[in-house]
Every structure is written in C-alpha cells, then in structure tokens.
Amino acid sequence: MRRLLFLALALFSALSHSQNQGLVPAIGALRLGDYVQAIEALRPLAEKGDAEAQFYLALAYESAQPPAQDIQAAREWYSRSAATGHPAALNNLGAMYYDGRGVDKDPAKAFELYRAAAEQHYPEALYNVALMYGRGVGAPRDDREMARWLALAAESGVPGAQAQLGLSYLRGIGVRRDLVAAHDWLLRAANAGHKGAMEQLATIYELGLGVPSNEAKAKAWRERAAQ
Image (cartoon, rainbow, N blue to C red; front, top):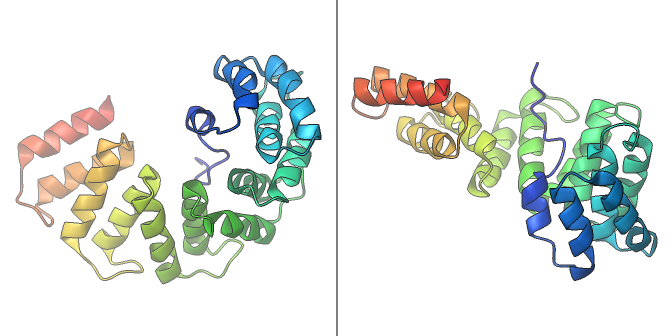
C-alpha cells in the first residue's frame, strides 16, 4: 500500500529555501545527489549546533544509497535539529516513528512530532496530522479534526491535502457536503499534478456533480491522469 504520510520535505523545494549561505556547497552536492560530499560539508556545521545543517545532514544520511546511508545517524541528527523546534526535522522524525525506521514504531510519538511541526504551519506536517486524525492512528479518529487540518494543508498548497479535502466535501466527511467546493479543491489538486484528483474530477464531469455534465472534460482529465 502506498505510504500516505510524507517521509521528508520535498528535497529540491527544501534546499531552495535555505537562508544559510554556509550551506550552499552542501546544497549543491545534495542537488546533484552527491550525498557523500554533502555529508562531509554538513557535518562540521551540524556539530557546531546549526539546526538547519543538522536537518540537511539527517536528510543526506537518510536519502543516500548504501553504504553512505545511515538511518541511525539520520535519526540522531533529526532529533538534534527537532530539539530546536526545526519544523522539517520534527516532521521527518515523526515519519521515522510512524514507520519504525531507526526507532521503535510509535504512532503516538509520531503524532506528537507532526503536531509540533504543524503548529508552525509546516505544510507536510499539517497534512500528516490530518491523515492521522482520519485514520485514528496515534490520535483518536475525528473526521472534523481531519477536515480542519486538511483545510490548513490544502491552503498551504499540498496537492494530496487538496485532493482529500475535495473528497471530504464530495462525501460529506467531517464537513457539510458541498459539491462546488469538492470540484474546486479537486481541480486545484489536479492542476498540481495529483493523479487521483484528475480521475475523480473526470467522474465529477461525467456525472455532473456540482458542475454541468461535460463528457469532453471528463475524457480530457482521464487521459491526463493516464499519462
């Protein structure tokens, strides 16, 4: 089954937002997939207590191929960065606890870490919190809370959250059923490249749910999803 919880901050998006110029060489190495060089460049900065360097070092250890990959080192550096409140580190450490990678599996701990990152409006963590409420994993199942966090993640631009919020409106899960809102959120997700949203949007146009029936649009979205 496809793992819905985000493992990591999208690599290139994360790197492009770095404000620490000392990380530039390491960022270049990460962009090129040279994790060994990135680790060598990041480690001195991380050992000096730079939380952002600690996060990227953990990401490099986690993303590298064996023998450079070191999940235990990734957990350690995520933990150090997370202790400073770094939202991406909190999120990724939460994913490790959710999966049981490098640590014993602990959904409640994962939820705690995701929630700490989400309270800083970190987009992927907002979505992860929503998913855990929706599944009742690590937190009590609560469709309204799921929808509330989905809305925050969707507004932050997470395509998966936009798609799932659209489905929530379509089915009336955690929110009042609203076919127009369902169409609008699914359209945003589909335009962002979310395949499931494209397929659902095709069905919406085929059946005329909240919009006039349109076979041409239904066909176009199905073809786009197939590509």
